[in-house]
Amino acid sequence: MGIDPLSGIRVLDLTNVLAGPYCCYQLALMGAEVIKVERPGSGDLARVLGADPERNKAGMGISFLAQNAAKKSVTLDVKHEHGKVLLKKLVRTADVLVENFRPGVMDRLGLGFEILKAENPRLIYCAISGFGQDGPRRDDPAYDQIVQGISGVMSITGAPDTAPYRVGYPLADTVGGLTAAFAISSALNETPRGAFLDVAMTEAVISTMGWVVSNYLIGGVTPAAHGNENTTSAPSGTFATADSPINIAANREEQWQALARQLGRNDLLDDPAYTTREDRKTNRHALRAELEHTLTTRPAKDWVRELNDIGVPTGQVLTVADALDDPQLFGRGLIGTLDIHGEDLQLAGSPIVMDGARKHPGTPPPELGADNSEIWSELGLSQDEIDALKKEGII
Image (cartoon, rainbow, N blue to C red; front, side, top):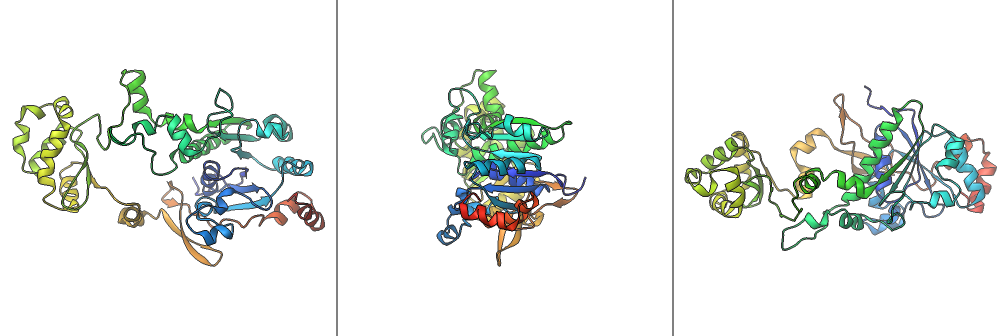
């Protein structure tokens, strides 16, 4: 399979901020032509979001840069009647349309799936929302933290005395975007094409909580916050060392025994409090304290090397900065450099290595409306017509 499996696929990206743009970024990295359809004058809200105020003022906020490279941009007021006509023309040329408005917005604009399907029966229409296109919450606003709370994620994140905690990045938006990209890729494989995809961020997140959900539904165990402890095994969790914490996952009996011996704690193997897996789970906190007596005598890197060498899964707890500088990540080339308007900036490429190669964006995130002339002229508009539409604020 080639490095551009979606080559020849045109995607209309009517989305804003993160879930939808992240979805469409993944499609762009796989070779799709992604056209952002943005509001004239302002565009995607992410253009003014991020840690650098100067970039925000220029409409190239860091939040926008993160997931909008390798796309094109046109501006269009889809509330204007002429704008609706132009969108329909554009839909006739597309394979996919992605939107993340509240449910019902596109229908009220006269641009819902049934209307657009009449223009292009092969259109794959993907609607990303917080809670889905129906149900009692369908009209509720949904930001990432709202979804993290409603999905139950926050209730099991943190320790018993600190939960609920939000996950430290926009988990719901990102998982929702990945789910949508997967759904679209699957629908593109269907013949004949044409589908309405209803992706709810809440459901996408809950589907990733497989063990937690099944323990409750099948095992009758009420999910709870357990901090850094792995509730299925012990010793398995986060442990202090002489300088920085490490994660150890001694989940199998032979791993537990190897760990104890490597730490010179054969006495723990003879202690009835730790004889069986269930014993160790019951007494996990006392066991951690015993192990940390030894672990805190040496630095994390020493333990990581030694324990991995004997088959006990161990890893450092890194900062984001350290993770990005880690030789494993650096060596596999996830982060690439792209010339963005005369400045070399680092961006994450595709998380997928295909046939030994990783796809990185080849073009920078677009200026607002940068591709108006190309795309609208492709649909038969003259430059005078394009200029007139811009003067009227339609594009």
